[in-house]
Amino acid sequence: MPALDEAVAALRKAVRAKNAAEKRADDARAALAIAMAEAMQMGMRQSEVVAETGYTREHVRRLVREVEEQRSAS
Image 1 (tube, rainbow, N blue to C red):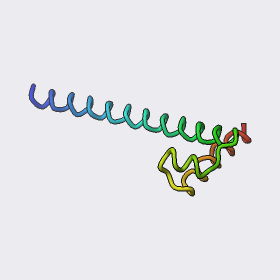
Image 2: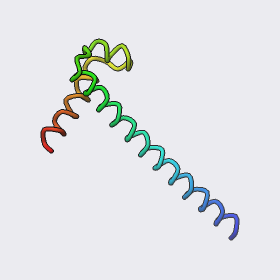
Image 3: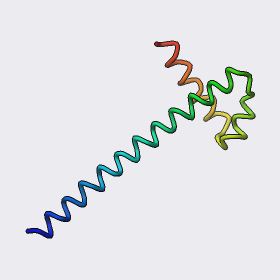
């Protein structure tokens, strides 16, 4: 059934595209967390990071803590 084969191929292609997009988003989030941690290590105040990113103070605190924990575990 050619139509069904095309539908399956389109579905698989869409799944691959979604997975790739999620990977890019995860990578971008990780890079942002690292940039926030580095900015704060260089003296930027948390409130400034909040203003620049639009994240809440708690979200910034959590992401930066995760980066610091990963660095200390390495």
